[in-house]
Image (cartoon, rainbow, N blue to C red):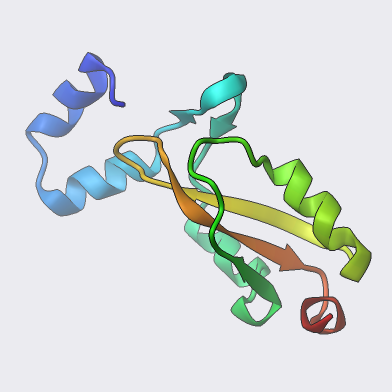
Length: 108
């Protein structure tokens, strides 16, 4: 949920400006964890063909990136785990992406 300060910041912006502003905000997650937007330049460092889609995750916040990384490390080196969240509410969307180091690990 947005703070009053964040709502005030977004109030006078167009939709495009609000989305751009939201991408720069850190969202507080349960347990004191923080989720932050990864810069747009980082996408090229994590190609789609090395990403594994993980669906049907419980949205209550019980699954953490470290747990997904531990599960997938038997297939190869895990470079990044991204649990998707709603930018406006901070709630989890029920899916994640696990980025592997190479194609062999992603295929496995």
